[in-house]
Amino acid sequence: MTIQPAALSLDEIDAFLRRDFPQLYVHGEIYTVQEIGHGTCRMRMAYHESQLRPGGTISGPAMMALADVALYVALLGAIGEVVLAVTTHFSINFLKKPEPRGLIAECRYFKIGKTLAVGEATLFSEGDEGPVAHVTATYAIPRP
Image 1 (cartoon, one colour):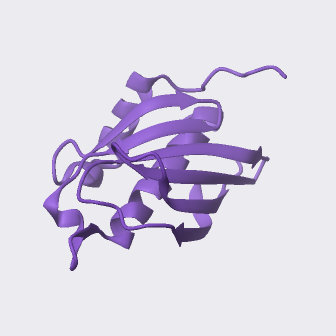
Image 2 (tube, helix red, strand yellow):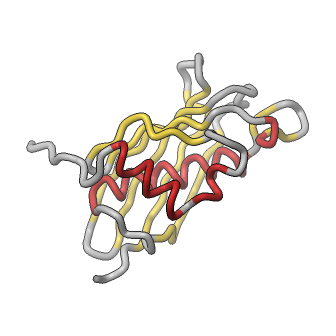
């Protein structure tokens, strides 16, 4: 099996996100792409108090945002800067309560076609080995 290189470097994806998705940085340097490959990504979401829900846990919407952004980045690692690739299906299983600390998303794609891509993300709390959530998602890729 041949491993294809990423279509974008870490610096290129960082510049792209800052330019086209400035809303990711409203609370500062929250999202960091740690690794990018052809259809793979490892992304960190730093802890911020805005992510908490009652009970002192990271909220579902915060975890969903991390997974969605990380899966988008992993897709761009395969297809390059395609701004209008959009989520068409998103399913999350919350597995355990994430403590108020940074989260890591590890993503990979099963299939990247001409118009659809299907992938998964597993979310982990920093310092904890077991996953806190598992996501499957489909993205629509616009025709050129």
